Image 1 (tube, rainbow, N blue to C red):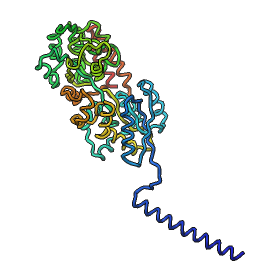
Image 2 (image 1 turned 135 degrees about the vertical axis):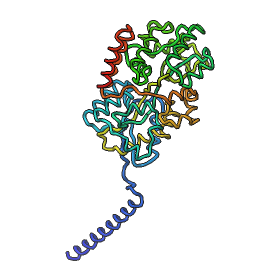
Image 3 (image 1 turned 60 degrees about the horizontal axis):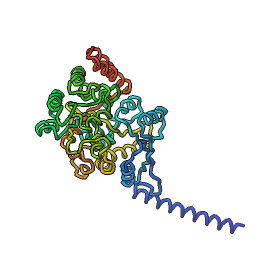
Image 4 (image 1 turned 30 degrees about the horizontal axis):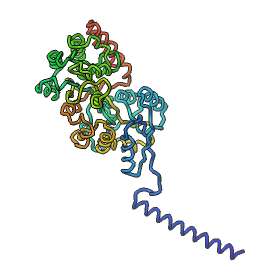
Length: 416
């Protein structure tokens, strides 16, 4: 019995010493490598809308392959922006950490930041040496709430002036593409050229009582820097002989139809309208060599999507690393070349590979428009503010009466 007990104790001691030596070896290896090679990467959940192109998955794969500390998983959301907004709001308002990184429509940022759902990124940007001027200005302004930056661009969209390049003189076309012109100049050109090549209208744009009216008023007023002057100018266009009589019912659809059917010399619309002409959609009577693009006089209102961090995330550092990658040079190049999205990282506007991926980027007028984007109002009550703008602007544009009342009502809405 004593011999057995003695042998057991010797065997146990040997095992203990072997385990201790093995443990010391692991610690040494951990010091050299910095992390335990057997540990799993931290999962980062990315809530983003479905993408009909390979771009979003490609940029996620590129990030995951660039390091081994984090693994991003895509939580695919609906492409219905209203439903997506409500789904995110339900999650964020409960304090949930089910999503770490969020894709946001540009008009949601103020609402979510004001409610405390987003993590400010100013310190992250400073520590990384990132310059706000390297990113699309309108996108950055859309994610800046009370002096703090909450977002970086995912992919921007912007308003453009389309014009008939087969009708305008080279001098007038060059003036428009430079962006160095006014709405008065545009009105003079619309009056000058209407009727040529069987056109019926000089200029078409969005003026129905819906979100498009808020966007167009943002542009006419220079992001509400001159609300009274912008409303007056918009009314002048509403009542001009070169404008359709039913302009106050125009949305994007009526606008692109009038232009692509050759009925209007000028049109304000989004980049998708160029794609319709390029692909020869049904009803398109124009060819690409008849179409030019230019900035809008007071700046182009930005649309598109932003990247933000859920303030309730337990992986904020990892969320930032992913956002920094996607919004940076490599990520934005993937989004552009794989999906045809516009880059929100300005240095890529001169990258030939990116230019080749989107025909609009080869146009000087388009690049000038991208360099002068402006934001719609940034507010935690954006929907309420936009409704106020739409109601009072449309009432004034319909009658031309009580301009001061419309200005006062909109200004009060903007100040809330």
